[in-house]
Image 1 (cartoon, rainbow, N blue to C red):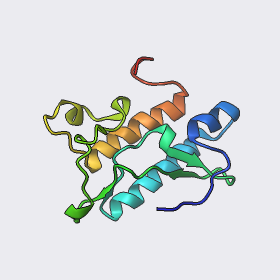
Image 2: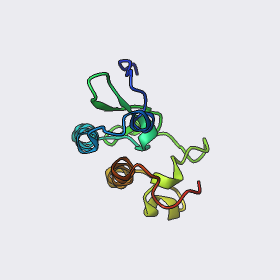
Image 3: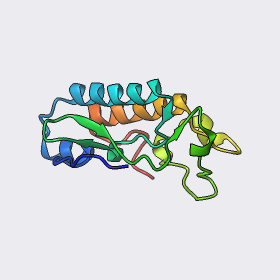
Image 4: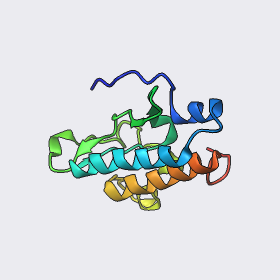
Amino acid sequence: LVSNWCDEGNVKSYLRRRQDADRQALICGIAHGLAYLHSREIVHGDIKPQNVVVSSEKTPQLCDFGLSFIISDKSTYIDATSMGQFGTWRYLAPEVCMAEEPFRNMKSDVWAFGCTAMEVRLFQRIFGSGS
């Protein structure tokens, strides 16, 4: 998978440099990107601010598709637990964290989007400062 270069870096570093950034536009852009993936039956699996980059046009773009899969194509599924890759705990939906065999889906992507949106909006980590 190849994507274009995004001069502004990830959304966290972008917001550190540009405190006057249009946070609402960033959140809406992330939502549109996720809606596009879901309309194609793709689960991202690791939505978080570090996996959203910002182009020179100030457009957010999803990146890091290492845990992504196509719902209708079992050959794209990975066993993330055997690889030690559950995703990032802070952005995992409770049902994913508590499951014996964690499995991400569109609903868990939406949870992670909500966590990401709050972090972009407030520019602080949600759920405390621990990891």
